[in-house]
Image 1 (spheres, rainbow, N blue to C red):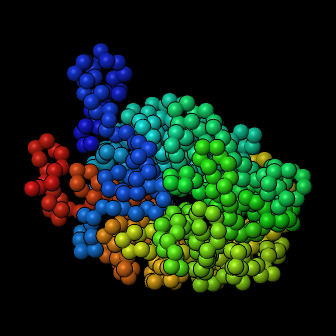
Image 2 (cartoon, rainbow, N blue to C red; image 1 turned 90 degrees about the horizontal axis):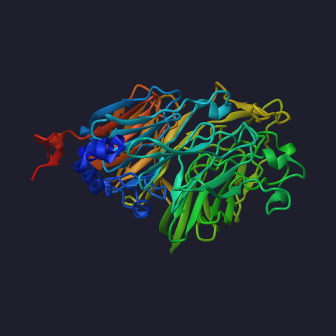
Length: 565
């Protein structure tokens, strides 16, 4: 559907009444209703060309685009097409969603519909940021939207789920889903699975009890809720001390999961336990923190779990994307789940059963574990956070973090950003207090430590790193990766740049300096046969494409871009 057509639909929706716009306009609107709709079939597709209909593009979490217009030969010709500036509080960490030429973007609690060709604002839904939040929630971060039909869903900083009309931005309903502890927040993008909208929360460092909740996509009525910290007597409760520790156990679900329609299973990562660094008040493995959970999306029932870091003492959240890949491993074709974990190891699981298959250390320096045993459990060293401080690696920011990885179907390679750094971890008992963080106590960076970042390419079949591209610049960036069917790997680098490299060898092909730190992951889409890339940096959203002359595009009298014959 063209951008002009979408503008017509939006004008019709704004009229509100048939008589206001006339019979002809109403008929045109009815005719156009079939376009711009996100269907369950669209969400299930693993072929991403024109649209990018969800946070990771598709359910697999691969962030792999099937578009082929931009290649290693012409990537050097990419240029800025437009820039959108968000005036809201907080930096942009969202990945845009694009459907039929309309881009949907969030900034804090606000949502925008943009013309994906020009960047013109089509509508803007405003909502004030919430005062009195703490820790991560106080940054008012929002990572994007989910769409089903003509309904758009987003989370707010204080853990409300909003449903908007995607054609006009009008609010349809508003559900508060994390009552009872004001330390809750939300920073994620929702995930639509069949007729439900799935959400999580932030606050794992602040003494909340984590959960995943599912709501009816039409009515907003809660369908089910899975608590990641089991109550006394429930399976897994034996991994916590008796008493009320479970009520403030953390295990939040602050990044969207992935979904396998064939297995009808969602996969969702959980965060660290609370308090972060003092394990003396929570003896045991502390299920289901630092896990990937396999859940039935219809009922919320747990199918299996895998815990990457039992009794975590280093804030090694497992909220990194659980990527779903069908590939041969050790001579057998399998349904795999791959996660580059914050603890410094790259894991491969059987996603049908949750069986551990292999783990590979990807950080060059780590001292918290001697390795991973035959069952996938880390073999810890005797280092633990102490009141006087203990140097441990990886750092508090992890060997990697929430920023997106990618799996290239074309290159059969897994790409992700890693970080080489260590922290001094300190622990001192403190009680939970609502309205305050619950770290007990913290981690600091030594000025003598050299913090380095790398873009890595891993061959899962050989369990080996194929190449590694060291980055330069400020390593405080939190930028992710995507890949394309022409073998490109696109990412934000620590030098405030959007960069594209050749997936075969990591050779840099092109870069653009945004002038701002990149804390988001890129995506790609197409309108009228032309491919674009988009990525947020600072408070701006940048969109790139090839010059019209490079792809055989000309501008007709109507202003709509059409391919030449």
